[in-house]
Amino acid sequence: MLSRLSRVGTTVPRLLSNNVVRHVSQSKSTGTTIPTTMTELHHGPVQSEHGEVSPYVKNPDYHGFSTDPVIDEWNMKVAFFFGISVVLVIGGTFLHYVPDIGMREWARREAERLIEQREKEGLPLISENYYDTDKIILPTTEQEV
Image (cartoon, rainbow, N blue to C red):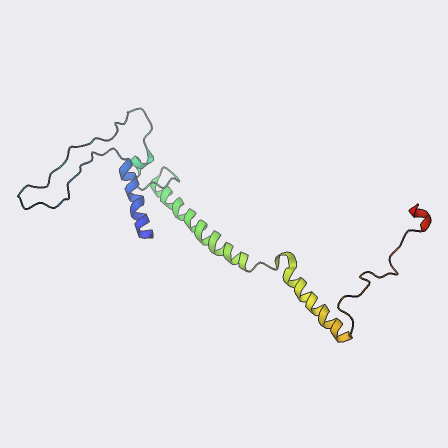
């Protein structure tokens, strides 16, 4: 798959260049001695002298990072290294080994520990009074009215 993609990447600059294109028939001959024919020449779009030159004309292997071919290739390699190696590999590893998000695992372990402790002591798992009734301050009848 990647080898096919690399071949496509080199044809795009050639398609955008202003070279004369010749089309040669590749069909099988029918037994006669007629040579393969060339169709008429098609000229690419005429480029004016005062306009900008496409980066693909200057550098057929243009990757879009710089107009200098050496810097362009270097920046492409660095961008793909950091994009693939650092982001996907190190980022995936980081997300895999992140500590317990939302403390869900801790809450389950703590609940299991409390259940075992209450079963050993012979207490109910949940008491009738969730809060200690001695610590609850209720309003007096005078304050309610």
